[in-house]
Length: 399
Image (cartoon, rainbow, N blue to C red):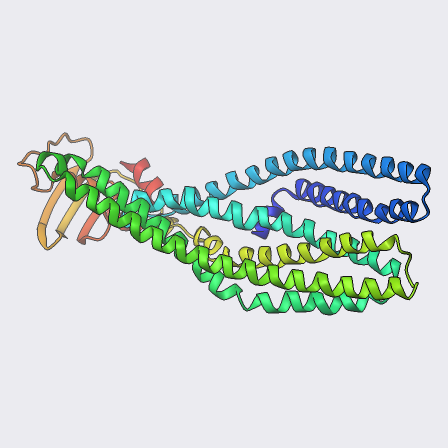
């Protein structure tokens, strides 16, 4: 993911800076509650109205800033999503013809739509949300520490508790995300195959079989989706429960400090609000961290190979001056011999016609000569160079 983010460094920097500004404004709205609450205790209506107006003004600025930052972030995320789908395309175009057809269209569509969508929702968006919550935690912790230094060790201890325990949930969440991705691919693949075979079901009056197969595929995917939701819910509820416990602990410390007159009474409303911000943010932070780690297999899946299949031996220079020669060509499909010690010589400039009944190998021969099929035995020579030694671009330019 870091490589994708580094492609747009200025957009990344602006988004992070904007998130920091919004976090500062959000924390400030909580701190200002102290002054309005103190005005209530002192029964000073003028001060109360003054601080309410100030707080509402900060909120208005925050809401306007958040709107424009959300739109700006969306544009940034969609730029990255375009890059991701371009990366998937690069991975696909690196494959040889035969390797390309080892994967079904449904599986490729699943990468473009399901895997990419999962990365967008559970990695990119979670990343910026994680940054936002991380900055909020820092600002809120500083704000609490300003009220009294005792809040700092309390926040550190409770934060460590919230961060360490959810890490144990990262592995099952990662496996659940991988299973969901595989399930999406299988569902797309099955549905594509069933739709492609609809004419066969219709012509042989087997439409009930079509419905049954689709139902089975849907039920299998539903089970995977339920398992994913169970794992995600366990993670979310565990973190949420910890958040509530930690907020109660801060409320207890706040009450003790207020009773002993170590903090002003007006701070009670602020510290409670700030504590909720810290631990709700930590709760989201932990959950987002787990979700981001869970998408790691998806990023590994879409990494293009360093060297494309059809670039192997691609530096060999070749010319086509004389003839294309086939020597002892053998090729089998599903146990059926299409070519058995087949020999043929085609001179450059000559005109030839391939004739024969359907299934005798005309199309297969053309696919071999065009480099689409490479798992044959024997030799196919362009002058004296074996066809397999040429990459697709050079082969097309020669023929």
